[in-house]
Image (tube, rainbow, N blue to C red; front, side, top):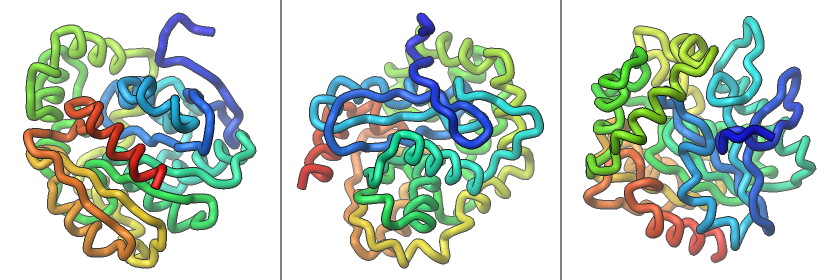
Length: 273
């Protein structure tokens, strides 16, 4: 077992091993992280761990190409591959059905999973979600175009947050150091090459099928999000029949970090209902 909190359990998913966190008991919720540099499931979700694990089983994987999941030489990273990874993870853990919580890129992945494996998914939470087409924002272009430096990481963390006090010197240093782990930047820089609008469209590849999603869906967005526009969530609300939308004011892209307790209460109420 590693002394790094980001490294937890390892399980075979297809031809490689996925690093994942597995906490608590009860009906399983799979938490799907976003696509920022240096991101891990732990960095994205650890503030929620103590609040949710008392009520549900939390499963939070590092998606292929991110974090501490095994990197295969010549691996192709795209939505089909990520959908397959989560399906393989659910199978490996012998789970019949799960809830999903998807953040940003993870939201597009949650939608794709619901479309391909509708019976394996119960309820869905989308937070600052991708999955529909939009002109790429300055913020997202900077996130996907990141080159490693503490100054660049500081800019990104300020883009992610409404309240910049969350972008502490310690967090900037931690996320920067995570982004330069061996192999991390090499795989990250290959994920969303210029022109990065293509990455947006890749995330929106299943947009035509979203209106067929029958699952009860909670859409969450920060009003001041400068990475993924609030209009995305309004469009998802329009497309998904069985959906509701909650907007946090004074909140950027990191709802689960800027409004941790309120976000936990919101999703727990939704999943318990």
